[in-house]
Image (cartoon, rainbow, N blue to C red; front, side, top):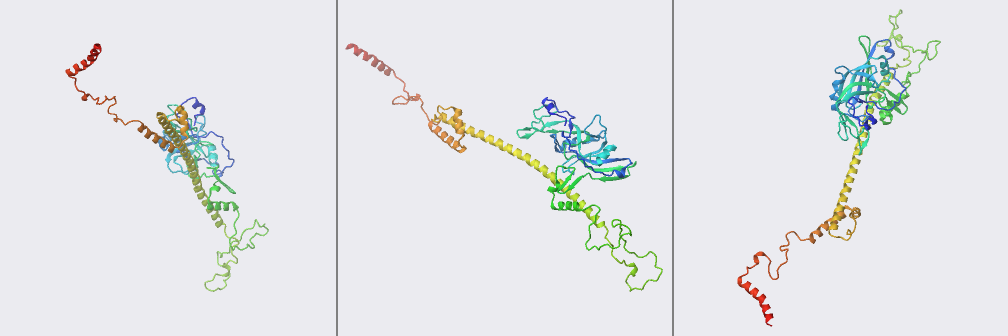
Length: 484
């Protein structure tokens, strides 16, 4: 992936053609090689037809995520309008192509167990042919362009807009990666360390001669076996012997104890006698073939025999000195075939176990993040309940909060349990209801007149006589005081 941290910090957009799925680490060089079909093809014009798994659905070591829809959307671009080249190390500008892509297809079922793109490529460069055959060119990486790069954290299209999230970094417990849209092919390269660890050759066919009349096929499944060790080139970091079942371990142990070129003694095998050429060493001796009837009739008449019996001359005097070695060879072939079958099953199971372990760790991380978020929400709810209790006490002038800072009172109440706060709050609500009258219970909020109602309808109109009497009483008292 040609998008660096410096470019991210400089707020540069993701380049549309910035996809190459090699991983930026130093390769571990394996000095062992496999000599396959080299001597038989010396001096002949030849090419290779290679089947490979190019890229798979899912996240790579570059934190790019490929979808089934995106890989299928650009499928035709790998061979249209012209077949895309096979390169080495993504050298798109000055590198010579070593072959071309003949066919590209999407498959839900692959040898690695992951859905992805399958390529059929033709390799014609002589040097590259040798390196593919001896195992140096095995792992591959695609070079492509796309129409969309989506950030999984915020959903921003990084081709059009910049966001703060950099692939591989963690944001609130979630690892950022870029989801690739339609993948349009540019090239496929042999690289030392692909970002997709399962991308590489699955089979190789050698086509020889001008007309291509001779074909020999090999499966590029390179293995290394030693005592307590069983590895494949596809997964060199995994010791399959440790994860193998008892049947596979027994088969491997038998292969390790069998010496090439030796033969196992058969049951009840007689000791060889007189089976050496005179003057030859025991190693140079040869077995005597069993006696057979002569091709022509004997010159002398045969000795008479009982009917149904063979003549004595036609009967071998001794059994064969040693049985043929074919059963031993068949046994080795069967064991090798069984090992190959069991190894394939074990590799698939080991890979699946690693995938499931990764998914389990991801789910565990999401679960822990959800637990933390839930705990934070519960803490906020508990504090809100404590605040409601304190506010209710302050409105009722409770002595434990009067003259105390509200925040200090809330912090003091937070230490109480949820049940205690809920019970206190319910008691305060009931007390507040008793302290104030119910709405509508006061019918006459004004001061009532002594001895009577103050309602407007209860007042009687004043008559003229009532007015005269009231004035007379007022001034009459004054006249009486003057007469005195």
